[in-house]
Length: 389
Image (cartoon, rainbow, N blue to C red; front, top):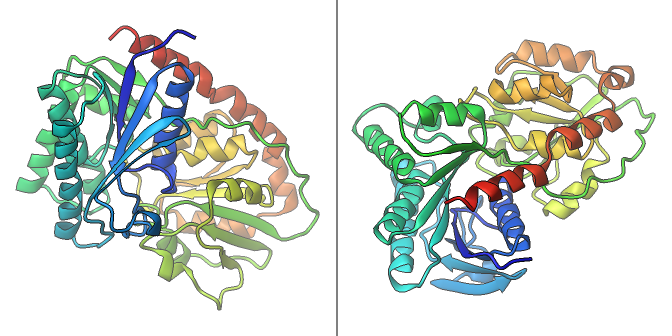
């Protein structure tokens, strides 16, 4: 394979942190390396989603090591998972400051991929890369500050207008923008920027597992795995519904909502804590369907769980609206319930039986997902575009 240029990935998240955001960047880094690129990653010391630097990295200001032939630079930050907006802002600014020092004192590749959001991190990386004359690819997975407005975390005003200006700057200065949904690309296009846009969904890159035959047990086991946060609103959803006796919800993950979900009195809701992605994949085959909720419809959001769980052969119970709902329906991956339709969700659960599950068998769901969500084909399109920059 011909040697490709070096490339730097800038991200606020990276393994050993868990979740869709760190997985997305790790998959991208691995795929670039396999195509002959020399890959470097710059990210904070791991702290997500606990808000505490992981024990292995405590006390460090900087960590630099090679992981799976990828050089990973981890920078100091002041970590926090506080609900206080000012404290969260200080945490983001601390990494932005460390990132500024990194660009000033380290020799970095001419080709840079910037993960957006958070806004301040994306803006800092784009500004410094522009000053240093680098080629910049902006990887947009969330529409901040719009998403914060829709979730009630932000209000229109002076602070919001600053974030919008930062967002517009990032779009304007990029040489290529890749977005994980058509809604994201439409939003960016509304700014009338000349930057080329390319759809790049968060497809997983792993071999699909062999499926375990479903048990004849009358109990239906639903699984939720991921961040237990404000946007997902799992505790809010559960406050509005009662589970029938033949249905259990098994929860994996952690986040701000964790304490409200650990309820030893409700035997139909089982909390398993946070586990590694490898162990989670081993466990998912034991469940009948996967629950993907958002407490509010967020424009541009297409949860990556759609692609990962359907590839695992899990039918989806999707309650997040938007473009994701259209994908679930289009590719017949499971059932769609409108956001905040708690009565509809409860009615669905009450009618859930083994025969109901036959509408979307695991074998059919996995087959459709493998055909529809082809990581290698999508990545090759991205590489072809990258070579034209």
